[in-house]
Amino acid sequence: MKPTEDLKHDHQAIETVLRILTKISDNAKNAHKPELDDLDKIIDFLRLFADKFHHGKEETIYFPALVEEGMSNENSPVAVMRFEHEVGRGYIKDIASAIELMKSGDESAVNKFIESVENYVTLMENHIQKENNILFPMGDKLIPSVKQPFLYKDFVFMEGKLFGQDAHKYYHDLLRQFENKYLT
Ligand SMILES: [Fe+2]
Ligand SMILES: [Fe+2]
Image (cartoon, rainbow, N blue to C red; front, side, top):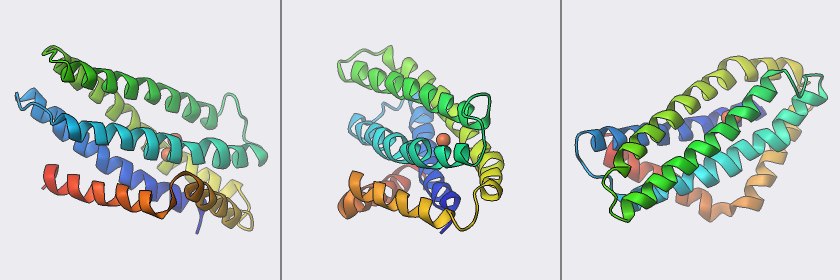
C-alpha cells in the first residue's frame, strides 16, 4: 500500500470525528447540553488516534521521507503542516479545558467549548484538504515507488507499538457507535 493511501484512510476516520464534534457543538448552540462522557471519549480519540498516531506517522516517518527526497524542512509545505499540527494541539487543549469547566458546572464554558470546536474543526478540515490535494500528490511523485512500501511498513510497526489490535478495534467500534448516535 502507498503510505499516502494509509494516511488518507486515517483522514476519513478523523473527518468522521470532526462531523460528530460539530454535531455536538451545534446541539449545544440549541441548548442541548453535551454528554460529557462522550466528549471525554472524543478527546481521547483526538489525542491518541488523530494526534499521537496519525500526526506521529506524518511527523516521524512521512515528512522526513519527503525531506530526504529534497523537500525543505523550513519554508515548505512540511513546515506548514508541522505548524498546523502544533496549533491543533492547542485547540484540543482548549476543548478539553472547556469540558473540565462544564464538568464543574460552569455554564459559560459551553460557549468556550463551541468556539474551540469551531477553531479546531476549521483548522483540521483545511489541513486534511491540503494534505490530500496538495502534499500527498507531490509526495507520491517525489518518493520513489520502490521506497513507498517501506514507509507503509514503518506505519504498521508504529501502529503495533502504540495500539495493538484491541485498541484499533476499540476506536473503530467507538466511531461506528457515535456515527449511529449523532450522525443518523
Ligand atoms: Fe497532518
Ligand atoms: Fe494528516
